[in-house]
Length: 106
Image (cartoon, rainbow, N blue to C red; front, side, top):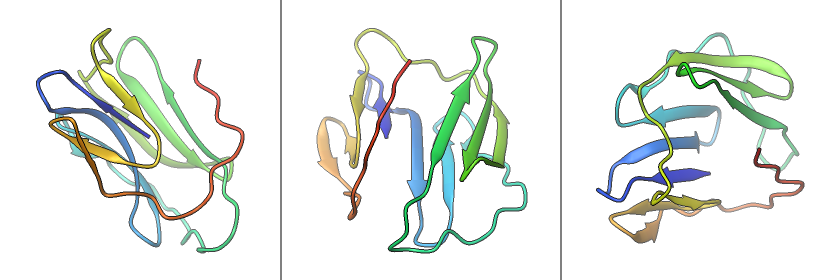
């Protein structure tokens, strides 16, 4: 998933590099990664991102802690939210090649 600010910056990204999921935003770049097992490709994974109003966030992969971070990035009403693609100044790219099921945004 991605949240792009109207200025073109990245408020929040969940990335998969072929082995691990990670959180990224333009304020902190890649978040500190705690031990995370390699996430096998061609298998289903549960990826959860929690983000408190204080800026404290946590990424879980298969219900195990993967990253913790603190950021000043915040979604705004004019942000662009997307799944399966990163947007660079409104142009989609870096597409996710796979399937997604049971998406929840609260």
